[in-house]
Amino acid sequence: MPCWLHRSSFVGSLALGLGVLYLAVGCCLTDGRITATPWADRPVVDPGASVSHPVGASAASGPRLDLEFLGTGASWTIPRLGCSCATCKAARGSSPRSRRLRSSLKVGTDPYLLVDMGPDVYQQLDRQPKARPDAVLLTHAHPDHASGASELDPIARKSPIPLFTTPPIFAQMSQNMPWTVPLFSFEDVSRPRRAGPYTISSFALTHGTNTVGFRIERGGRALAYVCDVDEVPQPSLRSLMGLDLMILDGTNIGLLPPAAPEPLHIKPDGIDRLLRATRPRRVVFTHVGHMAQPHEAVAERCRKAYGAEVAHDGWRLTL
Image 1: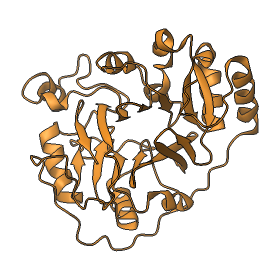
Image 2 (image 1 turned 135 degrees about the vertical axis):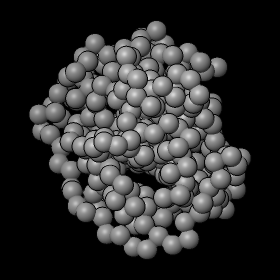
Image 3 (image 1 turned 180 degrees about the vertical axis):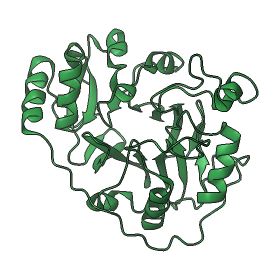
Image 4 (image 1 turned 30 degrees about the horizontal axis):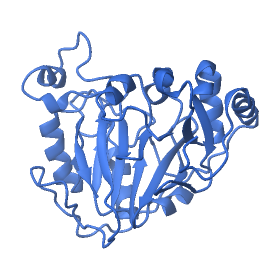
């Protein structure tokens, strides 16, 4: 177990047993509508500008926080096999930034955190100078976020990778893929935890299953990963205050007609309420749905509507 973890871990059958116990007990999420307050002076981001100097940058003087979007798609890759919609056509031709693997985020360099491990995690990590993440953060157990766990077997079999999530989510993963449990050491992030230079805390999200977002802090800088989400319960809003960056569910941004919004994912009116309530310095959308416009069009639309950016696969930025 890496020396930069500060608590003991539960591995193997013990972790599986605890996971199943928590699954039986269940989890209660407090749901509530957010109360909007004016979100004035929203910055307009030039999509061609340098990403190393965020709009409304924090006054923090500590180490920078490097990020890489390993995947920015929703439950399906873009382009989809056999699909000839405008976005899939663009992804195969004039708009390579429209090509999207399932969403995943790399935080830091050495050590680095991996947020979610969907079915594309092998090719996402195989491109990295260091394939083994120092820890994995799991938002929920849906296949597009967790089903790549077994791909980590070659780098985790002899030394389990710390897995930061909540007991109910770990229980669901353990039930769905019991063969992957020995690959991870469960780290309960129901309360804030230290992981090397990072402080990690989770907060409940509404998404039809046990789901959390993560607040990650280092050197006085703070980001939140809010994906997947339908609504943010009122108590969770406290974790979204004072952010340098909010990375937000973009499943329903820039939909091509006659596409209807995907259920269990935040809608445009909910996005506006959330941003007015929390006022992050910078907003980046990920988890972009298959029915969204090609990247350049949806990025321009979000710039005008929210003063926000839209991530694409392989995009790197520094806070």
